[in-house]
Length: 226
Image (cartoon, rainbow, N blue to C red; front, side, top):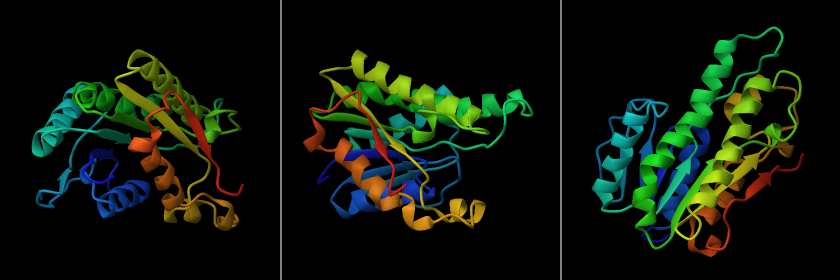
């Protein structure tokens, strides 16, 4: 990660914070983009761009271009921004499906499209998306979320094919991530079996680094000990 320039979306979330922290500790310069506002001043090694709706293509492009301008280039985009909803198909609302599509597919699509020209100019352009193991075979209540994450999987494969030889595009597929929010939602679960944010971050940063130059179009399950 030394001297790499990364964008991390969803940078204020449980996973985004860990990815950004580890990347910076290894010498990367990181631009964090998030829907939540940010009052953190820009530094040579980092910039926080808050108040951005990445489901809006124009806002995504403005934020990505600002990050690339701040650092002078862009080497990797890590698309962590997203959302989750548990709702059965029969009793649910079509608005939930639209919201999941916007939060999970459109955010990754818009930031990727904005970043690709910058990434193609890098010697080692990388995109890493966040899919889901739950999208491989959806259970009850997982329809809207799983469908949107399946869209992320197909987006990953399509972009990898289109940009082969210029930018690598891969996705990690976590199971349940061990976060405070997930523990609160599932208090009786065995947390020791869940994948930790740090374990997932290590796989993400591997795919964003030089060692993964031969990997593209991969959907990599990161299931912890489930």
